[in-house]
Image (cartoon, rainbow, N blue to C red):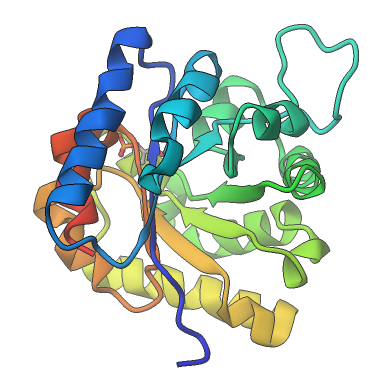
Length: 251
Ligand code: PEP
């Protein structure tokens, strides 16, 4: 199938995890190695402090790693920031950009997210570009309008010729245990797909669109079966290998 997209299950550890948490990668590798390996890519985006160690530990297991954010520039006087080049140097394959927690906590707008995605591509990383509406926007019937505007502003034109991943994460579903209805997930992912196809032609049909927001082993199968859901971006349930594997094995 020309448009076959290999699903991606990516874990976002957020600001969680000390060195002791590195054993979770060994446990996950053990679980993945024990049975038939699901036909999907698996990645973990730990805090930057653990990225090198986790990448080294993942080694040949096939588990990929990513950063949670990057600066638009490659280097310079930006205290506390980290560049895409540095993440790549630490072993990352992916970097999350535009997560709603960055958009809220650090006032990141679409233009900044786009420049971070471009920096990621320049460093040879695949950006996971997050979009998603707030609860009030969904209740006002504006979810698709809001996400359409975020996509236009956050996804660079270079996505037509480079690998990028989109993550649809309704803000009100993140960390709350709430999820949209399956019909709403389907409608949003169909809308995102049609915008990507309109903008990037055939390339737009190859871009993976992840769902994120309270994905758990118990609901993963139903969500991952929805058309145009090409995997998940998983927060809380990625912290423990058993939970994360429960989602991976639902692919
Ligand atoms: C996230 O923060 O990207 C996320 C999806 O979190 P959770 O799975 O905990 O809702």
